[in-house]
Image (cartoon, rainbow, N blue to C red; front, side, top):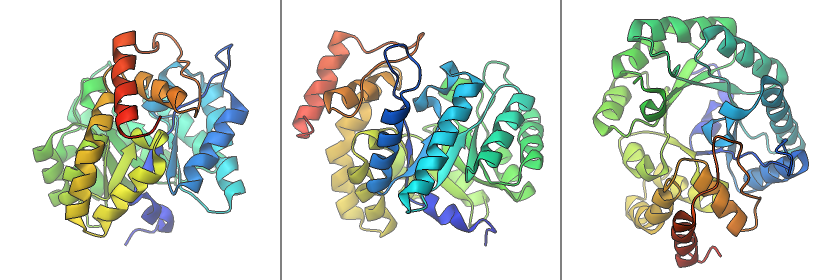
Length: 302
């Protein structure tokens, strides 16, 4: 049994939260606080400064600001939601620095993406994650997204890290590779948490024994995604299958262009927040906007 008692809260849905910007593209703190409460009220746990939060284009000071805001709102809510902070980097020392800040600020765990661009081999990835795990006491969730990092975190590497470091407690798996996910679930300790990193794959991953999702869709439909994962955790697979088919078009259209462009566009259409993105990201083109609008209308979301 894990010594990190609060980890049970990750066995459901964690929203990879979008970050609202003002007209000058600074973080819109009042809107962010409002959005965090919207997520908490609908049963979701919180990921700040993930890819969907545009972590790549925010400064370290802004990373700190977003983490501080999220921790503060979590405390204010009285519901003790889990705060997961994205603190990965392609520099081990930078990842350690960001992770130590998150720990000091009161985050419950760190989400550490596979280093991107410099393409470390598997034994280097073990050293990278081990160094971060040794530098903090709070849990680490690995994050495998080879479509963005160009380096896969192989199942053997995940399994070794899961057994080697007590505070490496889970993985957000966004490879889309069911065979790989199966190998991971078979090989890790029973209390190791395997989360889907792709809304459209959540049904398949949880059917294999995964425990939840780090969701993009829950930015706009938190209650529905919460219901979806709860249905699977209670092993009501027939109802879950119907929900998977109902929500599938939404899950896919949110990636009609690179995330988080489509989900921010959808959020604006639904009156949740504006669709501003920091360059080099930009709002979806008109054809993509039409597709997003069509799916939202079909689901009676607008």
